[in-house]
Image: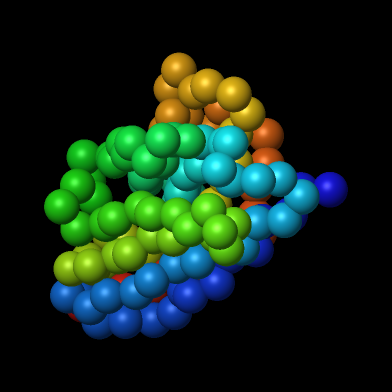
Length: 124
């Protein structure tokens, strides 16, 4: 059974940083493409960052230069470093695991496996 468990969320002031982790079991992330998504109240879930099996990354325009996705294959863990946080980054953050190849790596339909989320709140 595939399980993804996020941690590391919290409340910070604008300009602060957080590091999110996603511990994965049941699948080997070395062979998967992985991503972080977020969902703010009243809004649709949106893709934030993606990393493929070889480590190539894709970012949403709104987070480029501020967020960094990475993974530790040995620990089977996905990370998201969030820097220069803004109030508009406030959301529930979810990690997701895909199968094979993603033609649209920041789209929710590419990902069959999801975690329960971790809340990030940024105050001004």
